[in-house]
View 1 (tube, rainbow, N blue to C red):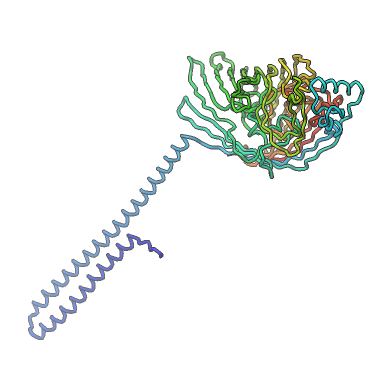
View 2 (cartoon, rainbow, N blue to C red; view 1 turned 180 degrees about the vertical axis):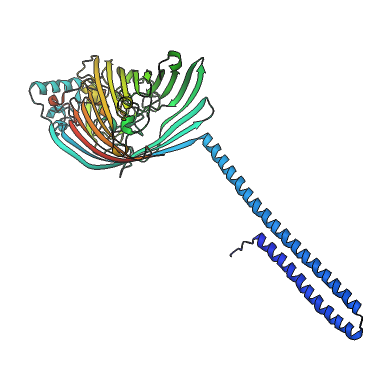
Length: 595
C-alpha cells in the first residue's frame, strides 16, 4: 500500500480558499435575491428611498467582506512566514547539535588510517645449502654412518671425524627469484586526550602478502620465519588485525621539569632514523639501529631543556618484557621447570641536543637472560628430539622430516646470556647553509654479548651453540655497526635518498620487526646499499616511492643470537643445514595513503 504524505501548509491553503469562495458565492446569491426582491418592490411600490437604503447596506456588507478577506490573506502570509522562520531555526539548531556531537566524539578519540600497497622483485644470488647427502645423514642410523639415534658425544665425534677426513660435502649453490610479490600494510591509529595531563595512543595493524593469509611461514632459518610477539604486525602474517601498540601517557610538572610516565604496549618500532625513508615523522622512541621490536613495558621521561638550557634536551628511562616464561609454555606449571626466566630489558634514551636543524640522540639498552628462542609458530623442515630409548641412562638424538608440514609451537629451552647495546644517531638539515632541504644522518652502534650457557634445544645443543658461540666455546664478543644516509630535494617536491649500512662479524641487535621481506638490513653482518625516490602527490597524505636495495652478506646468521658467525666463503655443509644467504637484490615500488 502506498502512503501519501500530507503537507500541512497545503491543507491550510485549501481550507482558506474554500472559505473565501464560499463567501463570494454567498454574496452573489444574496445579490440575486436582493435584486429579485428589489424589482418586486419597484413593481409593488415607488419608494426610492427604501431602494437607496438597501443598496447602501449591501455596499457596506461587501466592504466588510472584502476587508475580512484581506485580513485572512494577511494572516495566511504571516503563518507561512512564521513556518519558514521556524524551519530555518530548526535546521540551524540541528546543524549546531551535529557539530556539538562530532566535537564531543572527537574529544573522546580520533582515528587515522595508513595504507601502503607495495610490489617487490627479490633475487637471491648464490644461495647456499647443505646437499641432500648431508641432510640424509641425519635421518640415517649410526650403523649406516648417520646420526639418527646417536648420543650427543657420537654426533659431535662424527662431525669432527668428517671434518678431519675432509669428508664434509661442499654446499650446493643456486639462485632463487621471486619476480613479483605484492603486499598490503594497514595501520589504524588511535589518539585520545582525556585532559591536559592524560592521553592515550594506540595502533591496530595488519600486514599481508597478496594471495596468502596463513599467518605461519616455513622456517628457512631466519628469525622472521617465526610468528612471535616481537613481529606479529610488522611482517606479513595474514589478514588478522593485531594490536601493535596501546599505551597511556600521564604528564605533569615536577617543579620546573616536565615529566611523563607511560605504560602499555610500546611504540617501539620504526624509530629514528627510519622516518627519512618512510617519509614520515618519528615512528617510535627506541633508535632503530639497536631496537626495532614490538614489546610491552613502561617509560619515564624528563624534559630537561629549561633546566639545562640545552635545546631539546631530555632523558627517558625505558623498561620492557621480551619473553614471559611462566605462561602458556609446556613447562609453565610443571614441578620441574626448564631454566628459563622472563627476559627483561632496560635502557635509556638521552636527547643530547635538538634545535630542529641538528640533533644528537644516544640510546643504551641491556637485556638479562636472553633465551635461545621465543614463543611462536612456524613450520620446521624437520623435528629434532632426544630421549633415552635404550635405557642406558644417556639420551639419543632423533631426527624426523616434517613431511606433513605440521605447524610447531616454538619454546625457549635455555637462558644463554646477557646483551648490551649502545648507539648514537646524528641528524643534520642543511637548509640554513644551502637554502635547500638536504638531510643527513649518521649512526654508530656497538653491541656486546656475554654467553652463559649452551642451548638445551636438541638441534642447537648438538651443534654446541650458545650466544654467538659454537662448539661449546663460550666467549664474550663485541660487534659494531655504521649506518649513514642523505636525502636531496628533487623537482616537483620529490626526494632522492641514498643509504648505506655495515655490520661486523659479531654485530647483533634486536631489529626483527624491521619492515623487510628479505631480513632486517640493520642486522646485516656485511653491507647493504639502498637508493629510493619519493614523489609526493598530496604531500605526506599520498605519495609514491620507487627504490632498490642490495644486501652483501659477509657472515652467516645475521640477526640470529645463536651460533658463531662464519665467513660465508668458509662455510661448510654443517653451517648450511638452514639456507645461507649471500647476495640479495630487492627492487620495489609502493603507493602510500595517510589521513
